[in-house]
Amino acid sequence: MLELQILLVFMIIGAIVAVKTKDLLSAVIAVGTVGLGLSVAFLILKAPDLAIAQLVVEILVVIILIRATIRKDLPFSTSGRWFFNTFVVFVFLIVFLIFGYICMKDLPKFGEPIMKVAQSFLNNGLKDTGATNLVSSIVLDYRAYDTLGEATILFTAVIGVLAVMRKVGRKK
Amino acid sequence: MDNPKHGMTLIVKTITRLTVGLILLFGIYIVSHGHVSPGGGFAGGVIIALSFIHILLAFGKEVALKRISYNVASFFESLGAIMFITLALLGIGSGYFLLNFISKGEPFRLFSSGLIPLYNVAISFKVGAGLFIIFVILVTFRLTKKDDRE
Image 1 (cartoon, rainbow over the protein chains, first blue to last red):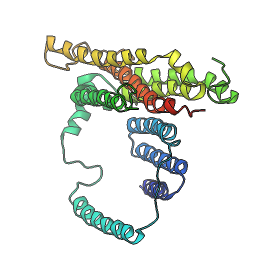
Image 2: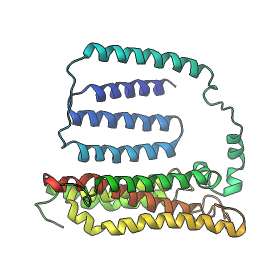
Image 3: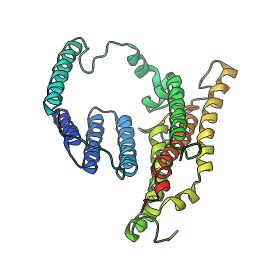
Image 4: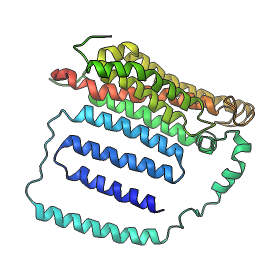
């Protein structure tokens, strides 16, 4: 698990760089490195489906971020109230660490889930659905209602983007 | 297709012409083998959308929208949704909603596991066309107004 922890430290450093750089393009590229690290982490944890989806969506999102937002003159203010900002950051960090410690203490150990239904999927998945990719058999057979909801979410996202960005009906 | 006023330089255009077919083919492979190997409808659909976005970035908006116009993308997205719902409703005839009713076949084959490949194809239509539409809207709609794209 050492390589996973190295990756997590790398991702945290990338996130801090993304927040702290003045240049917008550098920040977007740093976000991209965080996504790439997450993809490799999924691969180390033996979840290739998630790794493929994460990598591909990350590429799409980074391209959209570069093309759609980099040309706009976004207001970027760092001056003023630095004492208040730093104080708030430290307070929230301490609160987050305390609550995280309390919550993580009661979680089951890594790789030993409480739910017994996953083992039943592993045992009967190939016989029930005939799909050798168990993730596909769960997403599209046992839990197909979730996939239906995901398709609805995408449909709603397209309608929302169209409604916000369309030219017809916009003033001036 | 070769209008030097629009899009990026000649190097980018040549590389795009060589690679965009391979990217589309890889997306189709990921979709069609989603029940055998890692992948599936969502990831494959995003790769298919990325191949068209590749054309749009390299050649400009006009060429990409001539390949797959706005109405065609809208049609494919609706087709994906209707195909998914229809396949799900067909299961009611022999049981319940979303039932995988046809025979499972032999494992590790391309045509196996019943309706799961068809669900994958429906989701890939939906995701690919939907993300392409979102990209076109986000990138081009606001920029055409001020006309400040290169």
